[in-house]
Image 1 (cartoon, rainbow, N blue to C red):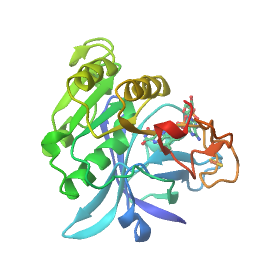
Image 2 (cartoon, helix red, strand yellow):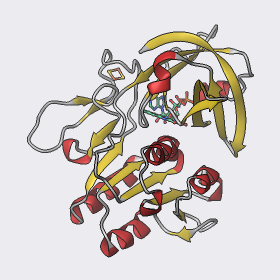
Image 3 (cartoon, helix red, strand yellow):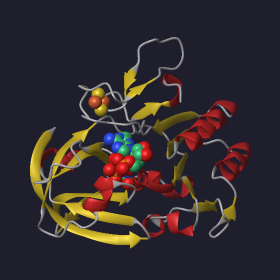
Image 4 (cartoon, rainbow, N blue to C red):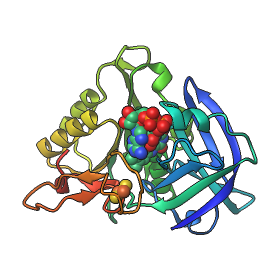
Length: 265
Ligand SMILES: Cc1cc2nc3c(=O)[nH]c(=O)nc-3n(C[C@H](O)[C@H](O)[C@H](O)COP(=O)(O)OP(=O)(O)OC[C@H]3O[C@@H](n4cnc5c(N)ncnc54)[C@H](O)[C@@H]3O)c2cc1C
Ligand code: FES
């Protein structure tokens, strides 16, 4: 893990309120895992004081060389507003790579992935990593949900990976008008996968975990908590343990990706 000031490679608007920022970070970042994250802070500005957590969306490479990472973000408040006006070559303060990402067990053949809204950010990275690991991606299914068509992101990425996507929106403006867990439940009832990965709003994750338990499927979830430090010092990211354990977990150190059985959502 390093803390440094690095250059912005690009910062582009990819949908209403959504941006992709390329960051010229090197070293350990070339080995970053899907589900790991970074803590960002603006240089030369006091406000906002606290760093903000963002998942690594993609490793950038060109001409056979690693060039940095890309973050996919949604503008929701003061930090992300200021982030969205950062220009190419400006500097940003980055701490990372942080946390434990998704684990990809050996001998897994059939995978379901579920993402809600901006939760798709680490899932695209995961899907491309599965493909790099020579997983037969045609055996994987992607369930992608959003409030409306404007919140459905990264379809091109799944297209390039040749991965079938089941789309849902709350208002029916794209895909089926229902919660993303509806087609997921139907698919689970037809044929269970070896593993289920999920990232999205907490209510969605709760429903996914209930389904995973109902159909006895192993499940890994990436959880969002408030994070002030990202490295185990502030205790702001506590996650309630599941099962018999009474020890609270840290989303920044023990997660943000957890085996669904080990936490209470
Ligand atoms: C592990 C992790 C990975 C994330 N990955 C992404 C990502 O890839 N793309 C993306 O757009 N967003 C991601 N987020 C959420 C992102 O951190 C918040 O949207 C961002 O911090 C909002 O900052 P703001 O100042 O713009 O908004 P604020 O005005 O501070 O707050 C707006 C909302 O953002 C949430 N928020 C604020 N500060 C934090 C914080 N320190 N930690 C967590 N949530 C916070 C709050 O729930 C609040 O309601 C991730 C969060 C976590 C914990
Ligand atoms: S964010 Fe500070 S302990 Fe986890």
